[in-house]
Length: 537
Image (spheres, rainbow, N blue to C red):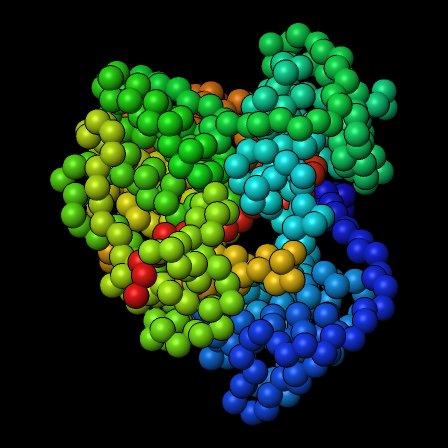
C-alpha cells in the first residue's frame, strides 16, 4: 500500500492566564434571554462570556437556533486562557443550527477522520493584542493581512509526487516580500532547506520544512524551471504586498484573454487603483474574455467585490440588481438593541458621526431593501463574452460573491476544485476593547435568489493546482483549461489536457506510481466578507 501525504496541522498553544479579580459593575449589555437572565456581577471573563452569548442571540444569522442562557451556560467556559475559552464558547454557539442539506451544522468543519475539527467554519474571534503589529484587519493566524501587510518571508510551498519521491515547489510568493526580492517565483523547485536535502521522505521532512519556513530566517537551495540554480537566505520582515499576484493578456484563436490572479479583496484604497489600471489596459487592447484566478483568495471587503463586479459587467446591466444582504429577522426589524454598545466604524476603523452624534451599529437599517446593490458600470471594458474563474478550497466569501453576482447575467465557468462555501458576511463586534468577534451575520443573495452554496461551488472542469507553472502561464493546468474553453466553447477531458500539456495533476496514474499534490504549509489566510456600508434608519 502506497504511503500518501497527510495534512500537516499547525497547533496554536495559548498560555494560561492569571486569576481575574471580581468585577461588580452592571453589564452594559441586555440580559434577558427568554428563559433566565445573566447575573449582574462577575469577573471580567465571565461578563465577556455573557456578552458573547447575548450578542449571538441578537446578531448571529442563525440566532433562532441558540438556546437560552441557562441551557448554554456561557460561564461554564473557564478552561485555559481568556481567548481559548472565548473561542470554545463561540464554537459551540455556532454548532446549533443544522443545514438540512447535510444534516450537520452550517458551521461544521470536518477533520481528516470525518469528525468535527473543533472550530467554526465562518465565525471567529481575534485577540487584537496578539495580532500582527503591522496588520489592520488580521487573518486567523496568517502573516499577511487583508490589506497586504506582511510579516514573514512571503513564500508558501506544495509537494508533488509520492511520499518517498516528491518535489517541493513554490506555490506562491507575496510581492514585496523577502522571497520576491530574492527572485523566487511560483513553480521553482526547492531541493535543500537549511542545507538539508528534501524530497525523499515526506513523513519525516514535512515538520522540518514547516518549522524552517516559520522561523525568523531560512536558507533555500534549488532551481528554477529554466534550469538556473539559486541559493538564498530569507529573513522575516515587515512588507507591503500587492493584492494582485499577476496579470497578463493572451491571444488564442482570434480572441484576446485578460488574466488576473487576485490575492485578496482589500479596501478600495489598496485594490481599486490596481484593478482599474489592469482593466483599462484590457479595454485598450481589445480583451474579449476574462480568466479571473481566485484560487488563493479567501475574500475581503464586500465593497471591493462590488467594484470588481462592475469592472467585469457590461454597461447594459446598469440599474439591475447585483446582490442583496439578508440579516436575521430581529436585525431586520431593528430589534437588535444590543448594538447600541458598538460604535459604528468605517473601512479605516474610524468611528462615525451624524450631525455631531456618535453613530452605533444600532442606528443602521438591516432591512433587505436598504442593503440591496445594483450594477453601475466601472471602467471602459464593455465587450466581455466569457468569464472563467479559477477556484480551489481556499476560494471563499467575497470571491464566491463575485462569482455569484455574475452567474445570472454572463457566461461564467469554473475551473479547479470546489470552493470553500461561505455565502455569509459580518462586521466586527468588539469586546473588552481588545477582542473582535466576527459572527456570521448576513447572507449574500444574487438577483436570481441564489445564496445556498454553503458546500461551495463545484468546478465545471476539475483540476488539481498545477504548481509546476507560474501564474498566467498558458501551460498551467487550470489556465490551459480556461483558455481551451474560451477558444472552443467547451472543455476537453482532463486526461486529454494532461496528455496535451504533460503536466502533473492530482492522481494522474502511471505504471510506476500515482502522483499527488499537497500543500506543505497550511493556509490560514483571511476568509471573510466584511461589510462597512449601511444606511441609517
